[in-house]
Length: 401
Image (cartoon, rainbow, N blue to C red; front, side, top):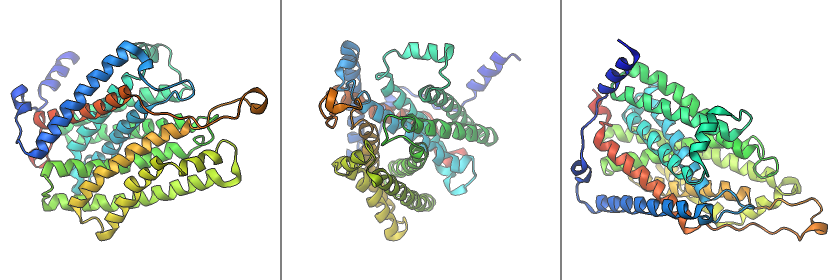
């Protein structure tokens, strides 16, 4: 049997449900479901409008400038790929590392990791000037010293391994799923820490430069994955969790408390070292960040509130933690926006600024309506793909036995 025939046989044996438009539109017409369906359609429509505006006007549709070249779309891209890596970690707890309590979420988490990275790619596609050319020259003239080249290459490999792992999970071939899951996890962690290095390698931006972000990205990915796990299981069971799910969520909540505590420790020392000594272009930026409401939104929504709720009863308030996870994801979005914007707060200028130019002011940036529409559209793509997946594949652990 040839390789092509073996490939066709492998694909033909993938279990899935044949669905049509009628199946996708059939769901229980509860207020919650109607709201989610309406938001999905609205966000998809906004994405189409935003994409058309970008194709007509190019980057003039965005509020990015030479002084602030990275905008909201890059922050949203980071938000989605961080979510993907986090879900990959959550999925690996069960099918790679064999923690039995987490096996019931493995397929949903791995499928979620595929969906979120595809949503991220859809958003960044409209930020890159020539995506087709990028793919061609990514192969023909690889930039081995470029962190961004490695980011694109590693995430492409990561997505491939995630898809293969998900297929083997559907086939109930746990041995092969574990092999590709472990490989995908390693590549995903490498890709994600490399994404942090895109900021860490910015020698002209002292507020970002250093080893902090490559490790910080992995930590916040895990935290994001736990938030999404609570959201996924809350929607799946309509906040009426079976005992087995409660056990898993309690365990995840305890892990989350530890992770958030470490994150608070990291951020505190990062801030202190930024301020200490009054280093030019670092200390003043750090103080400016401390005075911004977006920074405190990140701290309160993604760190303090979740940690307090978990510690209240050691993660046993599962319904409350579902809502806290929703607010936590809002905080994570602020975290990604702050990361991108705060890096560019201080304008680059010549050394003799008093002689050649006026003293620099803080750079201000407000996303354009096109950027907002495309960003919300990415969320719509994520929601739509996940809904299709729930209809097309059996994602529950009990159906695998």
